[in-house]
Image 1: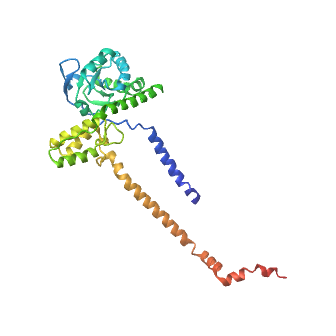
Image 2: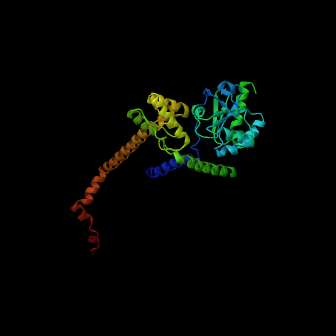
Image 3: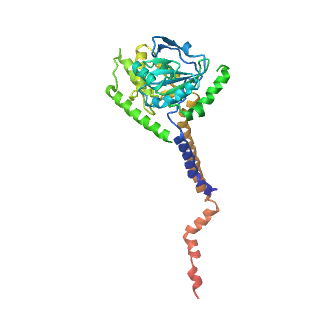
Length: 179
Length: 169
């Protein structure tokens, strides 16, 4: 018995090591949004490239991706072709042009293509603040009732879409009944 | 694998680009209408954690989001909001992550209780070990004690320790 007690330190070390190993695999940047299952915040902002005002009511009604992007965001450029691919497949994407310059943003869309149904121009980052955005790119999955169901921080690519977002997206569509 | 490397490289480059662009306007100064507000600004910006950074409060961080939050904090303080209201506003958007002293509730309970639990656990283990040592020390004092006394008493040892006597012819 007293022999076995000699193994207690080793046991404690193993438990500690397991916790630390788990910690190494976790991504500390991955943070759950505080707004999951909360309604998309109200806003009244300009629509990029027009002199129209967009409100919350104009962008909800369908299961939609809200993509936070900016021309100063390097990863957004990497993400762009994949967003275009999704848009071509019929996934509705609303852009939130976050703390950007209008001219640069419009040039971006002209040069690289425009995967967005429309772009909300969040010059001051006020909508971003209400949505808990802390960088770009970020993508929110919002259901047909305008409730935020998921937030992905970082680039969307094939792996993220087919492994994570697409199942959620399809699930929300089948729940809402409208494509 | 390659895309992951590429992504990481891009993140690093982005961080450098951002760092360069903000380094010109590092920490902005705000004029407060009274010193009490300034004190509260200092303590709140030290307690609020920058959501983008891993472990920096918004007072120390150069990240654009930290600048935005400082500006917001300033506006809210000048607007007459209480500390509670400001923290509530931040937490409703960024979650408990944004506070270095999270509210005592649900999942954050483990953070508050763990130090106490660990210390009391350590004290309990210490007490058990000490008691075990004491009992071990006492357990000798039965028949073993007699033997021990026998070993130490000079008369007994003289009779016992006479192997040489047997050798005498």
